[in-house]
Image 1 (cartoon, rainbow, N blue to C red):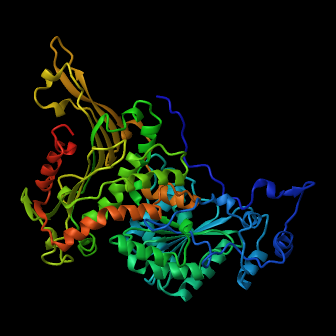
Image 2: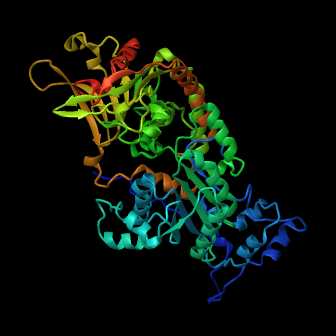
Image 3: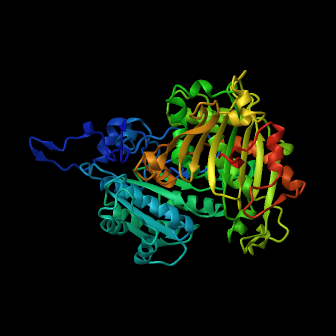
Length: 601
């Protein structure tokens, strides 16, 4: 079957200047030019004071999962040169001596900038299992710029060699591209370095800055900080990175992992604190589920296929289900999990973000701000969540096949008698013209019967169906259903009714199935690869804007406070089961049957 188009990596340029800004040779001779900063400025802004593109200690562009202000579009890497910013009149205050030295040492003919990626919290599990492997995958695919450096930063004492040894144990090559794998790994590891320091020490970050400059070699330095650290030290790390290790003449961005607060109040407070050091357009709030292949394909499926968009409304859709299940418990992470619970951990971010993408109106364009504007409209149109529309559960010990599985409270890191839910189901509604009356059912849980994440769209029954008698009284068996399986074994399939071959009239339900593993030989990139590449390129479409975060917390904060204030006891369900019975009653109240629990899933 023909492929419409194929790209290994996005086309991108890391050039410092547009091609028209300078000529590499004159009359066949190469000319090395140094930036005469005083003359450059004099023509444009004298006698006003001028500085490099710093605001609040520099352009520290940060990737946070969630925060609280309207974002400004971020220019691509190639447009973020000091020349462009001078041209646009963005330089406003006096430069420091160090900044002037950095400008003086800048060589125009070094036309390619460098990207320095610092993983703050480099010794943690997320860094080892996700961030470093994702960076290597980008390097392996040729998606990183020619000049890049990766630094690990953590409190642990470690040498460069020890970091490389730690990282090497988690690196793998693409299934479809194994040639030169060992050689690529060696080349990548040579770009990895380590600096030990405290997260709240400006002196330690200043030492990191010196090391970064050594590797940047006088090129325009662009810096990305990935904060893979607990949220209680976000502010300290951002303050120190902003004041002591941000780029002088390039961009600086920071990625921050969830959780971003526990409710509306704590989220707003964290946002306010961060904005003492960062601008909104420097903040990239990361939700790795938005980087999943099938989630990104959601808008393509809807907006580029004529058969779906006309059906995407209350007129044809009976209900939408967003389902997340894990077949394991907290297993040692109970201390962290108990402070948040399944609603904050999964529903308020992952599932709600998917819901907003699914339900939004057609955006003006694919620009990040246009898409995020439509998502915010959906979130603000949602009916306040009521306690009676929420079911919570907690897994208990269960013996199966001679193996005893522990209860949630058997975890040594979980307080005895904890009421923190490990399962939740909720019915949500969007009060707008497109979705009025359509239940959006969410379900998320740990220690369930399988591991999956999927979106299920159940369509309405065919009015006056001529073949009703062939289905009997169970009309749900005759309902068309679109299933988008996000993970594992990615697939999109549509359940349809058809006639079984033969002389009789017997109907069957079959799947029109796009199974990714069967259709595409290429391995699907990990979500972190896509999001890291977006952060490097300044693409904000898959990151959460502050007003999105505010709207999301506004929806869930009241019911969370009610659950915790009334000390609602969760319904207990056996480890490895299908969850609490209450979830079935919740769905039945809205005449819905969970699609993942039938014989035909």
